[in-house]
Length: 402
Image (cartoon, rainbow, N blue to C red):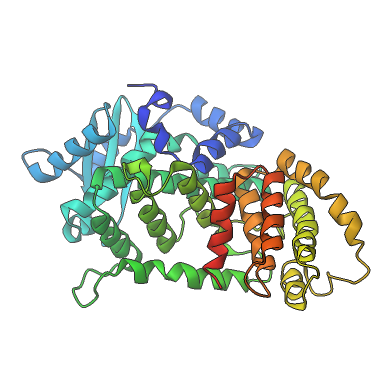
């Protein structure tokens, strides 16, 4: 199957990956780099270079590893001829090179071959196959970032955000190959820590709990530029949590998590490493801020008064002194529908959900939600086009933070 865009496993991709890739291809700068690469004459054979610098594994050398490759190829519907190479390196790493002359090249370091079990390697191999299946090589971030003129900061942020989403998609291909969450978790642990000793026991929940600490650190960043905005890979605890959710979802045949809920959860996780709409300068971010400003007061007033604790939470989002008695609350409430229309016109669903979660955090600042506040939250959700089930899930997700 040469046309990978029609491959049935394209459905595994996260929306942030597929939609992000489509949007990036429309960027003039990205298109010009891709066109320039297409016009270049290839001067060095990838296969010749690999044959000269690494060991090509054959079935006679390692029947178990080649059988693993065959199994993953069948699981993922990979039809292109594939060669597996091992090269000397103390780091745990693997790679997949864009096909050349009708062959796909995969590489493992010697360290990962020696220290990973076959079940762990299945996840790593499936992940690399995922990059090929989802055509991630077609947007060469490294080349684009080094191109002249340099990409704008806004384009750089889009590239890195897409790359992180692409890694989540590739992880799903790895999970499908592995079919074993424990093996996936242990491989993620080894990749993150470099540790293979039995002195440390792998506890999935403990590893994932690092996400909560990471989130708290992010909340203390005061809006400055963060290095994670420019990271090509999601943080390891974030990836493992996304994989946990994927194993619970209908994407891998489970029944406890619907696809739309999974994608909403993944978008929220990826949002931890993205530029926040509260600081971002864009039309969509401005629309989100304007709605949150008015809706916070609307929900607060639903119970009769905007409490001191709610005001404090409001100022945590908008800055000290942002809430003033002179605010024309009636006018804001009358303007809520128009602001919602602006949000729907300019903002993506994942960002709308992020903003709605922030709205519920402000609403919960003083106590449990009162009935009138909950009803007003549901009205806001309706204005934003969020279904009742999704809105309730977002409301409940902030309840877990109480």
